[in-house]
Length: 155
Image (cartoon, rainbow, N blue to C red; front, side):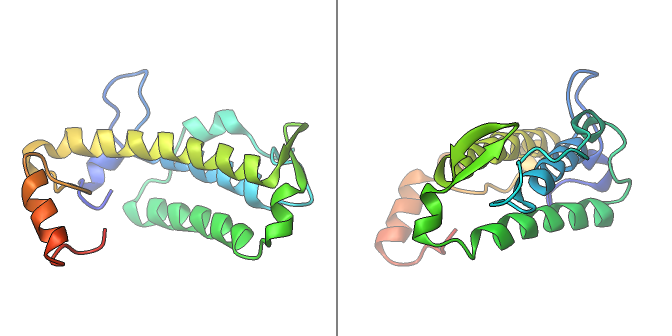
C-alpha cells in the first residue's frame, strides 16, 4: 500500500472489483469480529454488518492505515496470550465449532487471500515502478548468491 498513490488506494479496476481501501475495510471488519473476545464469544459478532464493509471506505490514506493497523492489533492482541493448551479449545464462528488452531488457520488463509488481492492491485497500479516484496523478477540467481554469502536482508 505504501507504493501506490492516495488515489490508487481507492480505485477499483471495474464495477465488480474492490479497491484496496474496500479490501482493508472488509479485512478489519472481519478482524474486529473474529478476534474481539476470541475465546469467549462467537467469531461472528451480532453487530457486524459485513455487507457494509464493501461500501464507503475511509476517505484518506491516514484513516485507512489507522484502520489497517487497528485490525492487526486486534489479531496480535488475541494471539499473543494464547498458550499451547488453548490451541485445542473450541471456539465458534457463525455457530460452527472450531479448535482454536482451526480458527486461526481459517483466518490466516482469509487474510492471505485478501493481502494477495492488495498486492495484485498495487502491482497493477505501479506497473514497472513496482518494488518487489520478495525476490524480484529475473533476480533469483543473484538473490540466492546474496543469501549464501550472508548479504541478503531478512524479508
